[in-house]
Image (cartoon, rainbow, N blue to C red; front, side, top):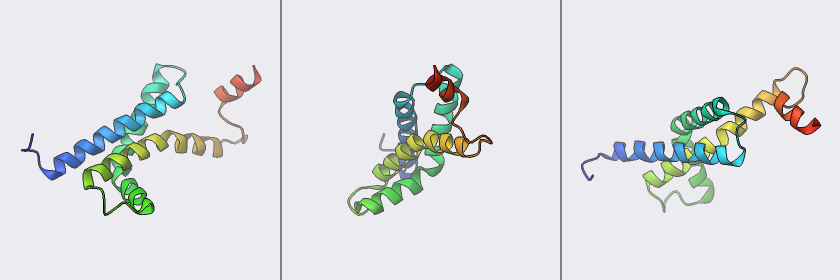
Amino acid sequence: MSDLSQAAWLWAAKGVGAVAGSAISLVYVLPRDRREAAIRFAVGTACGLVFGGVAGLKIATELGIDEEIGAAETMLMGSAAASLCAWWALGYAMRAFRKDGRGTSADDERVTK
């Protein structure tokens, strides 16, 4: 295991964080069906992999712990946070761009019934 390079460890931390954040986001708000679960998981994982490094640096800097934690911990934290927040941000954007200004139709049906 010590044969892995620093870059490989960072990618592994980023992947674990992205998957963990996606899994947690599925638990917070349960999906309606398998398709929605798969889409949410894929979106969360992709966002965690893409934005994990930047999010980790921002969080560590804001908390003042950027000097105390290592690169792998920063990457893990950022990927999990970006992955967890991805679906919430996407849902907000979808609601904001709807023409009628209401929430998603599934949410409306749940509230009215």
